[in-house]
Image (cartoon, rainbow, N blue to C red; front, side, top):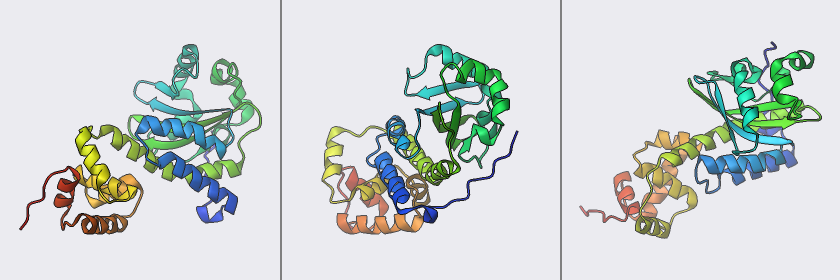
Length: 265
């Protein structure tokens, strides 16, 4: 098995057109994202506009059970899912990315030579029947149990180094959006009257996001990690929030967001 090196490219090495596409896709993924299901749907729709793909999925691998969940549901027949799970722990990308905090965007061809890959039961029983020859995975969440990736598949030409590099430029930002979307999933639902009061606050969408997380008890550092910003940027947002709401503390701002009166000194 090969040992791939991290793609050596940064945002400032992209062409103007590539940078615009990357920024447009990140905006489409993150704008008013309603949770992890919404992010999965948007990723499957928008990521192929940058990385051409015959089949794009969000894949959740349960390392302990050796089971893979594919989004969108119903895209592959149940029989294909059962075959994949049979070879789960032998899959080159699963082996390379599982429990690997440094996992990067990787093609199967980065890990195993095509001729060797074609000899694997995984290829002949799973990939060949669904006419997939080339696969590239962008890992966006890795922990001791789960591996979550956007996966690009093609039946024709392979993925170029440039395409892998473009996906890797996107990956850290998409990973931040995934953490944010999971956090949204865990937030308790707000009553309708609270939502109406919150919508009436004179804040920008980003300031509302910051205030929501502050109201949920998150520290500035927590909010920065969730939103993919710096703690200093979060502090600046809070300063503007305090000024707009006429309060002086994060507790008072949270009370105002919940529609509660703020005690006067």
